[in-house]
Image (cartoon, rainbow over all chains, first blue to last red; front, side, top):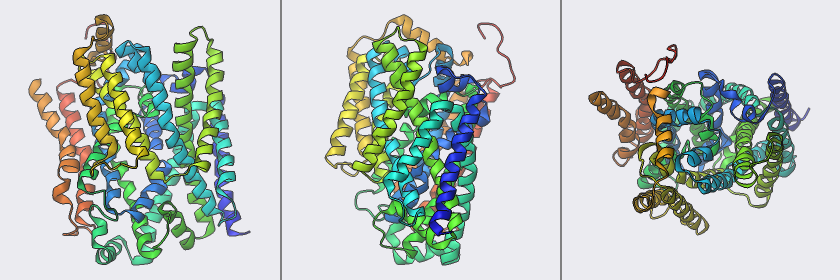
Length: 490
Length: 79
């Protein structure tokens, strides 16, 4: 049995097992649209925690973090800080969103804006922008999966066929089990990830350098500036770090699927418990960085940093372990992908089609449409991943730059009765416009600052100014909303 | 009640100070503590401490009955 056969068997075997589990999970519960998307609102703390954890450990974390540690050094540390900031914010921000969801029967992110700002345009705008910026995120998963299979095949399988196979599996289990299937496979993935990352994160520095401390001592001696900002870059210094932590910390729950997952909590308190616990999870990113740093010393000169992690594992460990890690990585790409696809397809089928275009559409038509969109989006992301490839981190940051532009609309919805639909729409349009401009002209970082952060700042100012000069939604709409989020009603 | 509100915001703002505002001052290699470059060590310690600060916020809220414990069933209207 060749090494590649062994490694690949693990990966494809795991994919099949997870698809089967997804199917099994779905047979227990009859599926209609609301069941499919928010699991009937019956999730307890543990399940919500698992679902949210599964969303953090994406291919970006697994391959991208090690890849950045390898190629950029210290700027990678932003990953430790941003999740922690995000959870601190979430402690205060999420419970009122959950209450709004429960009391106003919200299912998706645009629902929130429509109810608060009395604006179907706002619902449409946020649905379209949300889906648009989920495509780079989906593309990131596909690219990562491609790297995993390519490396595990020892060059035998090309990236494209491997991605096609894995994503057929994703489409299948998304089709039948929705959010519950993802939660179960998320559990498996988290267990495997912990094992993989602990073994490799401590093992590799140990094997090659006699421990993490020695590894850092050697690296500090060889490349002293690599481990402080701006590390291996020229444009990611202290102000980039600070602005990126703010941007991604604030944007963490602005992703349509992350936002919607808030509604699935059993109780507002569950979200506070998560906020308290989740920062610990951030620390395991450290182990991934150790691998990247070990690789800098051991296998310097790899052009695509995202491949450093697996390349080092491949030359250090037996094929079956590479397969195990590859399998963990495959699920790590599949689970968030399915959550993204469910989120996006529901957005377009319900919010755009049913609410805006054809309110007479039956529940069955909408469900069918949602499932068709899953297939379409998967194919689109696959196309871009093959035809217009990009590095994992760049894809994620582009996504963040976009979705974070929703933050002023969310924050002001909860705090300021004077926020108007004209204000938030203007802010979002201006913010996204700036992001698009900076991205296409390669101007991010902009004057040393994170481009999305710059756009967000302008967005906030525009939102406030325009709101001051335009009329707020009808008093009844606003008061209903503020009643719904009041703490006594939680 | 207002006083409790302010105290909990102080604790909640600590992560922002240590993980964002302090960065220009802690962007150093030396001293290397626990084998890690100083910048990294600083981040690791403060990330680890964040659950402590949030737990304190939670306790303050529970004390001031701002948090409804899960076991309590909501009574009629107007609580």
